[in-house]
Length: 265
Ligand SMILES: Nc1ncnc2c1ncn2[C@@H]1O[C@H](COP(=O)(O)OP(=O)(O)OP(=O)(O)O)[C@@H](O)[C@H]1O
Ligand SMILES: [Mg+2]
Image 1 (cartoon, rainbow, N blue to C red):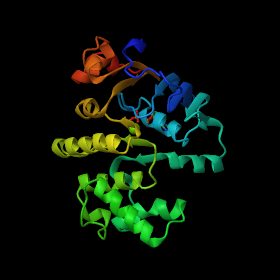
Image 2 (image 1 turned 90 degrees about the vertical axis):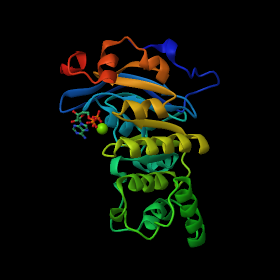
Image 3 (image 1 turned 45 degrees about the vertical axis):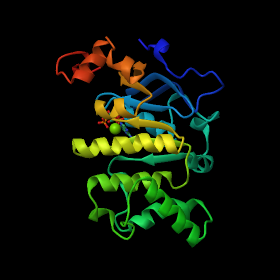
Image 4 (image 1 turned 180 degrees about the horizontal axis):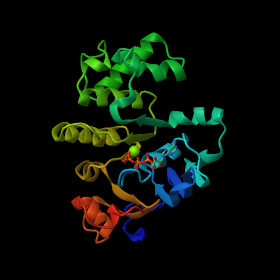
């Protein structure tokens, strides 16, 4: 059912940035990904949507090597990360900036120390260089005057921004967002979605976002892909996706209770 023809980013000049090839992954005998494939081009912003428990987070965890496929390959920048050793993976993860829901910030540390953390861990930057880089990152997410505060003192939207600032601190080429707006009100969700668009453009990253929120998806995606029953069942530009006649996509976009999504796959 995959609509190859609607892919707006044909790989005219070489390999995709991220290539998930025929991934199979199950837990305790229950298959989650079943021959799942998608290519994501350099600079592209892809949003993966799908129902709860369909394997969206599992997919993103494969991209950063937190999970290994039972079968298939995860190729990032031409390297197969599904077979890398833990040491190689650790080095490779510097390509990625990852922001989870709620930011997964350290509450015992200030905002400054949260953003400085990857720099202290992975670089030999001096204190002055770290300070300058943290400032730059805070600037990028439009946060001012909060570096001495604890994450718990900030609003939900501001905590997301801190999470984003930390995700970009090592200047990754790939940004991954898992449910970046979940739990935020519609207005702040929209502001956070705008920020993702801005970061994707100004930092020139390849961006993969997972969300339930179709408004957010349509705003930030060059391409929306829908995961259902372990596979990408539809993909295309927001315009094309919105016009899809696939009953699974229609039910999801329209948020209806009746339809193929309601049945357990
Ligand atoms: N480490 C794990 N061990 C066992 N089962 C897992 C593990 N990770 C995920 N699963 C299972 O795989 C399925 C897909 O999980 P996943 O977290 O990817 O869903 P999701 O699409 O991100 O859903 P949600 O929208 O609720 O975040 C679920 O049934 C989940 O219970
Ligand atoms: Mg998830």
